[in-house]
Amino acid sequence: MYVKELRLSGFRNYKEESFSFCSGTNIIYGNNAQGKTNALEAVYLFSIGKSFRTQQDRELIRFDEAFTKIDVCFDDAQRENEIEIVVRRDRKKQIKINGVPINKMGELIGCFTVVLFSPDELNLTKGSPNARRRFLDIAVSQMRPKYYHLLRRYNKVLEQRNNLIKKLRHTNDETLKETLGVWNEKLSDYGMSVVTYRKKFVETLKTYAKEIHLEISGEEFGLAYRTGFSSKEEFLEKLNHSLNRELEMGFTLYGPHRDDLDIDIGGKDIKTYGSQGQHRSAVLALKLAQADMIFEDTGEYPVLLLDDIMSELDAGRRSYLSGKIKNKQVIITCTDAEDLPESANAKLIHIENGKII
Ligand code: ATP
Ligand code: MG
Image (cartoon, rainbow, N blue to C red; front, side):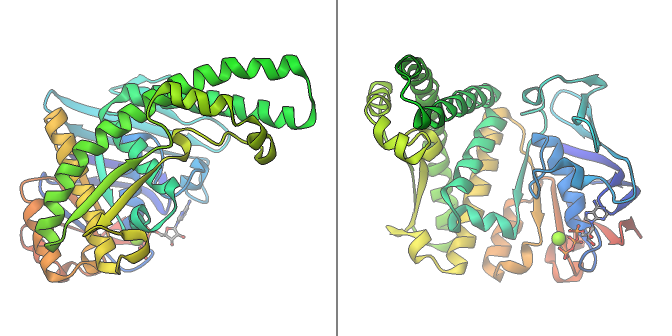
């Protein structure tokens, strides 16, 4: 995957700007609050149609503008492609791929792949299970668009089942209670498929990440998918027998929406015992493993987006990363390009107040 051009109009602090990138290392540098992360955010948007910073699309629109229009031009193995996104304050965002409007976000997933590594991504090992499920869901969706559709169906059924549980808390309506069986059947069916996809992904990710992690830090890395059940029957059984507790709590207690990833270093749970550096190495290993997996699977290495991360890594990890990203397209942001040994052969882009200077 090779991003050639990025055009921003009314996006965050950019009025009108065009970036052209080289196929190797690109360094976007400048002082704080000038628009470096904003530019990465724009590139990221083309991969899943959502920002990594906000759920609210309208925040992307420049303060004094009515809408933002961004577009990207990139090469994959087949051809040159263009994606355009328009966000208006009062309407659903519109996306065109090679000039053709898409109806569903699912059509975008998998067209253009990126892997992001930023200080916030440390949440992956430090934060709540939610962050890990989100990582899995995005990673699997990028490689298996079918998974994205499956997950949507699962979430829809989950939402409907949760609404039903909330209703049942206030009424003892037996006919309403009987409809639960249908939702249990659907939820366990979709849920088991979600778990199967995730488990398979995690098994492969683990083999890649273990090796990378060992190379980065010399330490053993462990990864496992943790789920509350191992078959559809078991899941269904749990759903059928937990209604009283669910009525107490007011939501669905079992299913992949409660699953997690167990990550350990040398057999010790990283969340409980990991040092800062161990968290960084683990996340770096997971992200690079994800990128390798995308390459193995699709034949295309994703665009690596590294936000402000070089300063966070020590010399050894930096040099490992530099070796790993050789001959791949990467867009790095930093405040001082001269600090980066990579800058010698890189394309340097200096940003000041939403403008390339
Ligand atoms: P740092 O080095 O601190 O990470 P940065 O260059 O990555 O800085 P960005 O996060 O890209 O900074 O840009 C932040 C700037 O963009 C802030 O000054 C913020 O006020 C501005 N900004 C964010 N959203 C909008 C918007 N919708 N309209 C106009 N400006 C915005
Ligand atoms: Mg930033």
